[in-house]
Length: 134
Image (cartoon, rainbow, N blue to C red):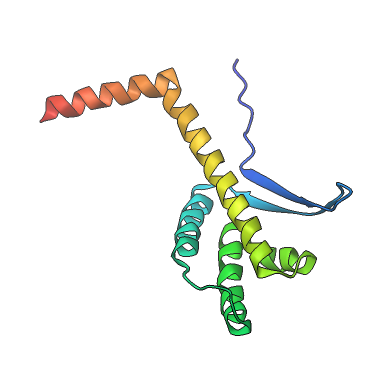
């Protein structure tokens, strides 16, 4: 009998202090819904064109970045980060690092699945079948 180990479907992002002690941990949910939310939030972040140069622009950016954090990492995630480091530029940097890590993880999983010999055989068979159907 082949046993199948259940894969973890979250990515942990521990935030540690200068002594290496964990202050809190944010998690990304790798379910299909979580991945869809990630891509929507990532697009929203990339479309942001506000420059943080004045007090007013900081006030404009905070709710925007909060919504992206919460779309990706859940409710309250931005507040945890901002409480430890109350700087929107640093919070945005952390978000960028987190997005890069999530994207890398998703692409690594996708590549591993595409390289699987059974998946490749299935894709080749379906490609042949669809060509023959035309």
